[in-house]
Length: 284
Ligand SMILES: [Mg+2]
Image 1: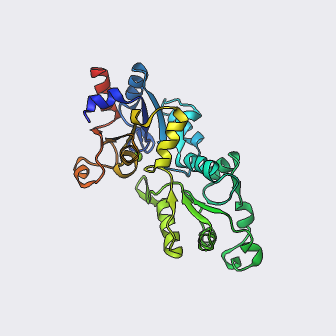
Image 2: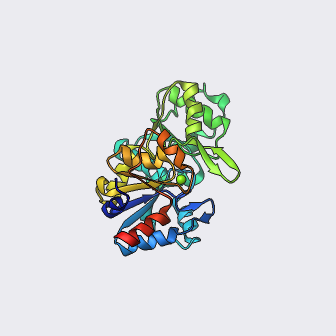
Image 3: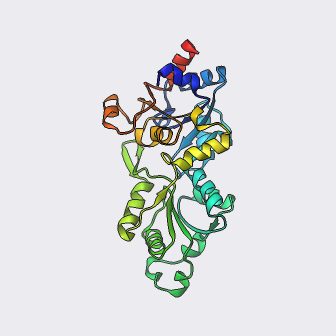
């Protein structure tokens, strides 16, 4: 699509954060300028991250330190998508969650029936005990669990092997950090899949559950929504694969030479969200 046309057509920009709005702890040059242009031209936005290890409040706080002040309804995580998915399709079902404290709290606050406290009293040596077997949940959910232990991994594998449904917030394999990468939920799911032979179902970017949730929450049609980010296979694919637009920015992971190598073709490519703002200012 024409790069100006896309900016004109888009009513809602769904923005990735790391590599798109900021890089680590530093805001990217011109990010606030882009947000000013959105306001000027009556465009809406929300931030969306696949990282389910932190609470939305933590991101609100991080953004406010960059002079970007948002409300709770202007940010979504893959954890939010999973909660909505469970409450829509599996209401009242019991869940064992591999996740950090903030994610566990979000699940509890939204009425998900977690059995973590009961299960985590045991160790991996206990899996043949009848009282442990009796705890088997309907569903195992794997998030980005930075508190993962061998016990928890064994519990998840045991339940899934015995028939619990296997879901995960997002498929990202590594999470970029200063100086390298740390294993993300996709890598944890790969270990469980190897042990059990069972594939997980993911709901975060690039899957339809994410686009559906954004459409439901904002009331904006998918055709008028652009998913903007620095990763083709998650950010851009969410738009391209699900009836919305997928926009690539070159301010993070993806380089220009990577684009022809990908099966997913972005609807438009910009250097940064700053360039998007500049083009809006000059052409809208
Ligand atoms: Mg990113």
